[in-house]
Image (cartoon, rainbow, N blue to C red; front, side, top):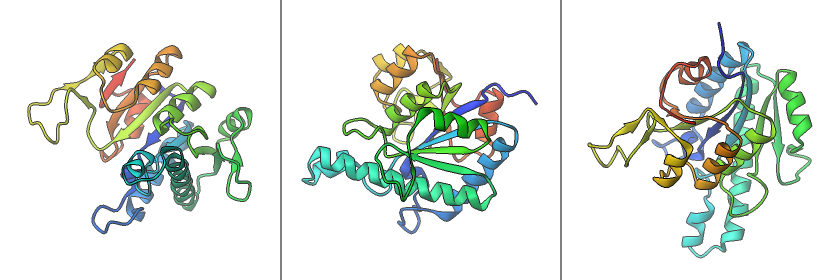
Length: 237
């Protein structure tokens, strides 16, 4: 089987891991389903990195609205991504997949420090690498983290998992006449101010020629289809 993308960064939102029915921060069924899908593409030889948000636990921007200082709120959000990263590590290890967690904020008892060469070595040895704590700086989103880490490790693409099947000109859940894009240029995505990723992340991917595939995380086998080069979702390139 030929693989179009052999080294990927999979970007997950924290909300994607949430148990919507019970209101819990983490849904064990979602974590298991994701781990099984990742195990499948890992067995094909795909080198996998994960970047996960923390919005299911705490989001810096939301905290600012309730009186939390923006910088403090962003650090709280970064710590939330560590919790999610450890949950993903646990789920993957239960499926027999070797994992390393690397953090942008030093916490040696919890995770390794982020070191580019060490991350690449882990990938070459067949380990999944989970990047947590964002970039380690406030005012930068986990989308920007995904773009930065993908650039640093020379990833073939970023897979952005969402709750819709691609990028639309407006919210398809609110507007029945929303139009889906099959392909977009980086400049189109920036100029149209499409909210699927922030402009910093789009710009970094454009500068480093890293394609972004935006797809529905809920679709069975979608991650595998993406790495094989099957057309799913929206491709920004």
